[in-house]
Image (cartoon, rainbow, N blue to C red; front, side, top):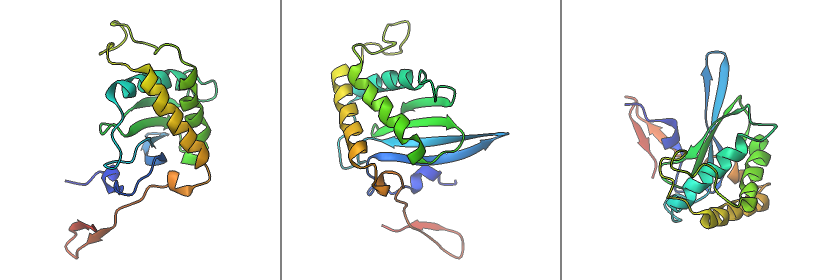
Length: 174
């Protein structure tokens, strides 16, 4: 079975940031999946589940209402490992080109008084939200992005080194 692209990222060296996960051509359209990484995998605790759920609701609402970007947003959702989110956008831009959008989205969490879409009719698990923790994570990540805006490490994935034998077997350098 072919190893998927995201498993070639060195999760022991990745830092929080904005990364291009993959770019796909779908007919005449190009879509890009970005990794919005808030935590260092396997080194920092995962994001609190209720806070993650609240961030998903708040930021999805923000992105889909952004006057400059709402028509470009296809998807916003959490990573299974709870260390960040994926955003899928139409087109192909560099992580630096979406930096402002992501920073605005996380900064917008500060002003939210109520998590949108949290009634039983609107949410699959409406009781699992934590606005205060969501604000804490969002504020920390936004400050981190601002402090590291000139650091290329927050925009470029660290890749694992793969050795390939003459027979085509792949080995990862540990």
